[in-house]
Image (tube, rainbow, N blue to C red):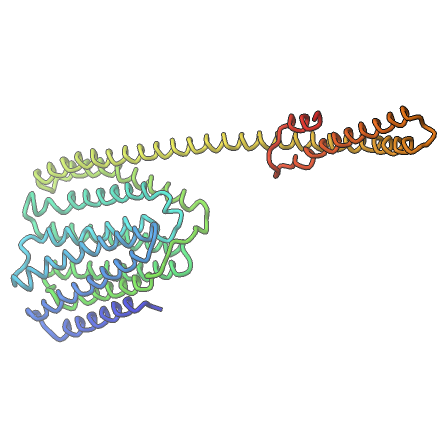
Length: 438
């Protein structure tokens, strides 16, 4: 079922999760519990990175892009865990700026959404990878704009950790819920191994999202510490995702069951892009009308929305430019195909005319050959007649000679008939006429 490396990774993940669970229930809030919890998170994320790297090497097309983006996503997750572990294990204190670790963590679901936008199960997705890359930049920029709008001001403009923590966890929950929803849609639209993979990935991300929400609520209530029992559901979600990635090691893109699947996907991508651009002015209006937020936060948000609108508008124009180039290429290809079709039609028409001419000359040659044969026979009888004078016998021989020449000319008329089929080499009508006159 699994390759050797995938099997080893799965066993390491299971052992790590069991050890963390036992330590979470056995140890109270202590340095040892923190060390075990942080190391377990790093090990599980490292296993995910290894699986993504292995799967990307054995995949092609959109599936390869899917695994590469997941590799980038879990690289950010590993960086986030490393930042927290460095502060809690080595420095033995809380992180001085949670925005760094949380910012890395926020990028994980955004990159996973971008990876799913490549539709790794579909062969047709490979035909428009250029547009997928623009969609990836569009999607990631929009999520970053939301993060800077709702979360960043509460630590950079004003110092309000309670508002920051609440906004951060609910925005991450929205991201993770989007990942679960997209996986659910892909699970319903696929069959076979890909359906199984999407199903396990959906359940794993669902557990991970719920565990992250519970962890955030525990942190707000002052009950959370690294290595506590609130880390166990998060590790179980990681373990489930590891299992999904292990069974997806040999998956390759397949043909779409519905021919219009790629067109519908492109339509939905365009609609989501339009919704993203329209949502920015709405966010600006909401921020301006929100009286409970400080004025500096409102000013920061309005400036952010203005810059984001320019940037996302530039991406939209870039996508239109790429679409125009693709349209020009398709028009040129259509014109070239039309000219080639006209040339083929002309050659077929000429071949049919030559075939008809060949059949006509063959029929005429057959009708002419019969009297020539009779004349040749009668002239032979006359030449053998002993009562003829030498001059009459010479005339009979000349008649036979002329009949042979005529029969040779008739035989040459049958040549074009046998070579006038559409599959035979092209011959001009004048070549047969020259042969007859010779």
